[in-house]
Each structure stands twice: as structure tokens, then as C-alpha cells.
Image (cartoon, rainbow, N blue to C red; front, top):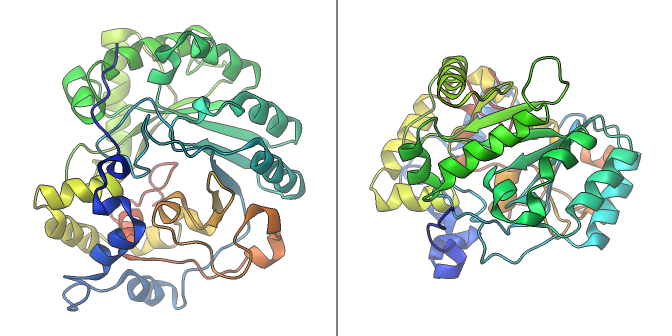
Length: 354
């Protein structure tokens, strides 16, 4: 049985629960006094212009901030005490866009997206709409959390869902430290259940990818090396198979920003991100081909901007007003958290980019 670690920042009334306070932290200190360059200036120097959107390929929809876990690194500040949930009406508006757009991927996230009461209906309707790749970002433990979720692997298989699951480490100690007591064992059981219906198995056509986030104030190791270690350890210790591992850099927002400040690692971490800036990664950041939709239908350049309340530029800020021609070429809103996506090999919801 998993044990929830604590409360969301919002429930605690922590000032960092407010996007405006996070943006204030990110704009002051090292960046205000000129010690470190602003991201907008650095990326403009690389590209010769401001960062802008290309043709839409990925529609990422956050169907709610409710989650059965309260993880240390969560940029969404998700948890059981978060009640923001996408309504069926907003889902219908999203489906209208899905039917009209040429986006090839629908990326469903949360919170735990499976906890939205209309989650399964939405997946079925999105599949009918013709999206080629439907990703569900699952925390794994939701599959074991309650009997109503035990059949999720069968549901995923029936609709050929691409499952992307969080897995901080192949050891119990490091996983439970980041995500809560009992999370590792529940995750292993969920992975075995997914394997049993074919996920991650050779030639099954059912894709199971894992996501790794560092447990402290440091950048992830090389993605391929991590994948090799994860595959070796999970296979030898538990007989578990998966397809790919995505190594994602923790961005300095929400709970991770709170951790950085509390542990007095904020300035050092920002130095590390800026010093690791990779121009090639800057050319391939995910916001150039992705659009993020919040639980209430508002539009953002990425999931991180959504959490910082930085809506897309222009007048079309809600899914009900979506116009693909007007969205393409828009200037992408940035702040200093964006250095997390351009450090080292880069970082995106699909792992490294350079």
C-alpha cells in the first residue's frame, strides 16, 4: 500500500503555489543583476530571432491536477487535494480541435489522468477522431490504487495506448524517497501487469516507456546509459521489460523550486543549467511543435508554462477559439525555467532532444 508523502503547495498555502511568485523568483537575483543572461536573450542569440512555434504535431492535454501521489519533484503540484478536473464540455471542445488539426499525437497528462471520471470516454472518442498516437502519462501506482483502475492495462491494450510511466529509479529506497512509501512496490506490480498484457514486450506493438527524473539538484546522466542500466536491473531483478527510457531535467518551478530554495541549491542549480546551455537543444525544444491545454481549456506553449500561468501570445487563448493558422508562427513565451529544456542534451516530455 502506498503512503501519500504530504500536501500540495497550494494546500499548504505556500507562496510558491502562486505562479506570479515563482516568476518573481526566476526573474530576480542572478538574472536581475546581470550575473546570468536571460533565456530570451540567449535563445535569440542562438536562433537570430525570438523562439517561435512551427506546425503543430503534439496536442498535450492536462485533464486534471488530481493525483493519488504527492511527488517531491512534481511541477504540476498535483495531489489528492487538487480538485481541478477537465469537464466533458471542455473535452468536447478539445475533440473538435483534434478532428480539425493535423496533429499526429495526443498526449494526456495530469495529475493522474486516469482519475478524471470521463478519461475512458475521452480516449475512445479521441481514437475515433483519428489521432495516430495517443500517449497516457501514468504514474503506475494508479493501476493498483483502487479496484476501479485494475483493468487499465486491458483498456490501454484495447485502444493501443502508448503508455509513458514515471520511474525515478530501479531501487525501492530512491523511488520511495521521491514519491512516497510503497510507491516502488506498487509500480513494480503495475509494470508486471502491463507486461502481462503485452506492453513493452518484443513485437507486441504495445509501447511502454519509462521516465526518469533526477532525485536532487543535478542534471540527468546520459539517457542511453540510464536506459541500459534500467533495463538490466529491472529485467534481472523483476523480469520487467519496457521500450525506451526518457531522461527529463527537473525544471526550477513549483515543488522542485521549493526544494531548491529550501536546500539552498537554487543559485548553484541555475548556474548549472545556464552553463550547460546547448544551442542545438535550443533549436529542437518541444514547445515549437507542441500545444498545451489546461484542465479548463486555456492554451499554453508547454506544460511548464501552463503551471506558470504564461498563456500563449495573442488573443486566441482558449481551446474553443483555436485557429491552427493563427497559432503557427506565434512567438513562444519564455522565462528562466526554459534553461532546463536546453541544458546538456536538452529535455522534453519525450526525453533528450540533442
